[in-house]
Image 1 (cartoon, rainbow, N blue to C red):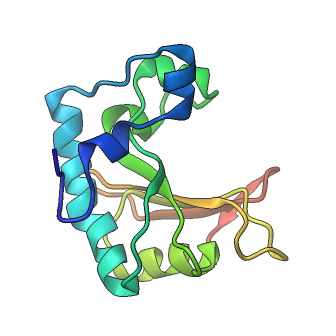
Image 2: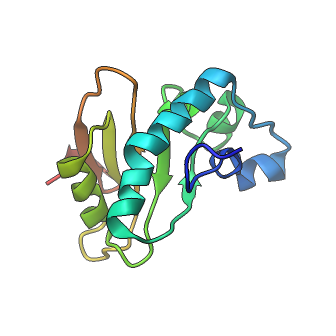
Length: 148
């Protein structure tokens, strides 16, 4: 099932951890709709801007999978609102800044970024149907700071 022109439900639910541990990672209809909105409002505009195909590092996570990967119980991945991704040849900070400056989003997080390594970390972005917070932060592995 395609959620948008370039992103599929299978891509959003694929997880090596789930495969290894036999965890079912099956979203309900409301989470599928949230993923569709994330594709439409964030992922497709990112792909259109850069013109480079990319895949998700992490998309939807069932509660069991989310716990298995050590993520927060409040993670927006469990509701289908969030995805983690990178674009080949694009520095992750450049990608995060472009999203921050050009799109509506709930959160854009540049996670585990190191200034001396432009390809370090990844971008986490979420979108909700209403009242997006436009929250932009970066995390270096120790502390959160505003995304600049």
